[in-house]
Length: 472
Image (tube, rainbow, N blue to C red):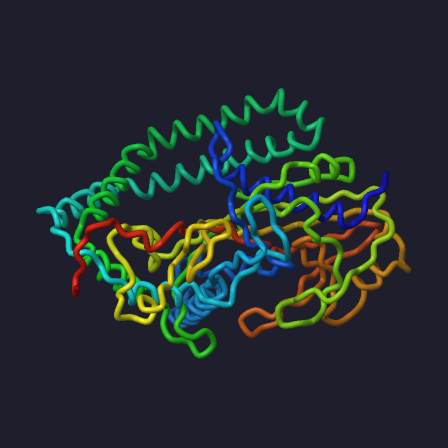
């Protein structure tokens, strides 16, 4: 039975969410909590060269001093642009326990850095005695951990890549019987490969030793004077500034990791499915934060708005022989200026003398859905590239879809989170998604960000009872 574009798009989104969910777990079990993903509608185009700043860590490249200075300036501009772009508090409007009732989980209008600064400047911390020699012990442990860090990160990356290969094969078994048969013979090998990478991480990458040191440092920091911790949080925020920019303002640095993800093959997972798999994907149980179950993705004609917004439904009449292939990567976002553990600490409250304290504001009420100033924050960006779509309608020169794809100008096609041919204004510059249409196949070779995996803060502030507060 033929499937509608809406059914196929919902199935694709269920598959993407399934990947994010399983990739957040480990080899032995799925994650106990569903990840909260803020999806873009449509995807936002990026080019590999947009991430020179992450690949070279803001160090100018070139044969001469002038070339290095020019490249360093370019990288700082890129870093400021991406950091400003990723600086948002995701909204959870439309989320209810067990389902999503409306719209797409979008980035919110509030900036993460602005909300975070406002919160930490309004905090009042408990008056606690700091254990003796805490600073010295932290310095000793940091000195022990630092020589291990490079080997740890190298072997962690190798394990992550092997793990993603295993997860990609395992995800397919949830909707494709043939993939299930293949996994019966290949799954053991892929798991063994991941386990071997884990063993190498343990032996040569100092996995347990390094993680124990980091955990002990975190524990000592939590037992330190909350006043010192607060001061360090404020200083880290100040130090996280890239510098005042005419184009991007005072941006706080956000780095994708690894920095070479955009030019590497490693870390990208192959995705594919056909109309034969739509029913099994669409009938999977919709999770609390999922995007399946008749969510309303469908086929949309993209207008030329500043955010690449969709304007109207684009009719597709013939989805026969539909198939889609693409590569997906989930890239962690690192922020040295942001300390979520301070927000979760039980040794602070909003100062009653501040606006936030007087109004009874909360960072998050911890409910489902949560509400507050900063209920969630982005922890990983989800990118896709090398998209290939095949279906009968793409061979019909008279179809609305083909005419839209061949039209000049800003318009394009939005399918689920995929942006095909549309324009998007990012950092005051218009980006166009390039595509090629020939012989019934639509190819979109470029890279686009389609969503962000987010972490929920939980109830905050949530101070212990009986504390004495600095300043009364």
